[in-house]
Length: 365
Image 1: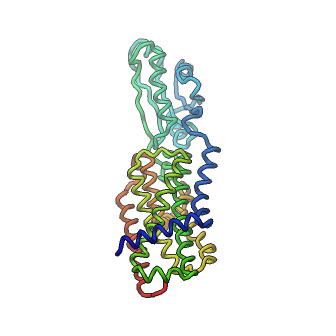
Image 2: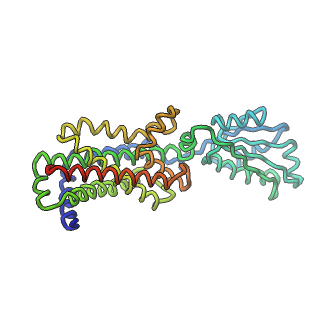
Image 3: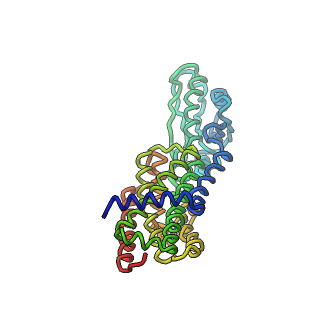
């Protein structure tokens, strides 16, 4: 393997890519989606936070009038009276309300007397911004009602997760982050299965690949093309994050997941050029490959049959989605991160191994 030859091929591909409208389209389409999204959807935290609170209380209380005063204009609160705790749990679980509040009898008198009654909050299985805001407001509101801290003990009770963990993941990430995950996967897929094959097929059709194979080995050519695709991904993904105003909680694991995923998907894209030998074939069939890669992003949160989930789990993009979701959240939304890394590495070894074997058996690329 010659690094000087790999760098020479890589630089040539990069220069050609930014002069090729087809490659630029593959890069600009996901970025344009991000730009449109940034204008259509405002920042989630910057807007007034709307919170719907379910209340269970056997005696009248002034707490529901104190909380809005403490919230100010940044929070829009709606209170719903619920008959019992069982119904309250169902409402929180079904997202009829954002948070539940169980107020004990004679709560107002007890807090003024300094008895520290227990105020129970019922939260969904996955933490939400609305729930965290509501709990913070409760602390201030109870102290304002009593006129002295500590006024009451606030217990947090989180409901067990429902079946179908993807729905809980969606709730935990929020709409903005969900879009960023989909756009990131789309950008990686378009670079891998359209931009890279386009450059490679064009060289094959124009016979410039013959000149490359005269001065470079099969391994050098594969490495240069893979580096080209990874380079586009490393440039394109940060630009996408800037456009969408992304704020990942764990940037280093996110960067590692993006690079590893780009390596895998570019290998798959290079492998498709053994089947799609003309630009017309790339234009026709790359969309099908892209849909398969994007399937996990489109099916997330849907109640798919078990067999469909098992098939999707075999796709590398499923594990890309899992890793970048965990990195954005800064916690483990999807367990088994090392298993996902192992699956991606296995896909990379398989894709590049088959590609090298295929090219080594044939002189023409």
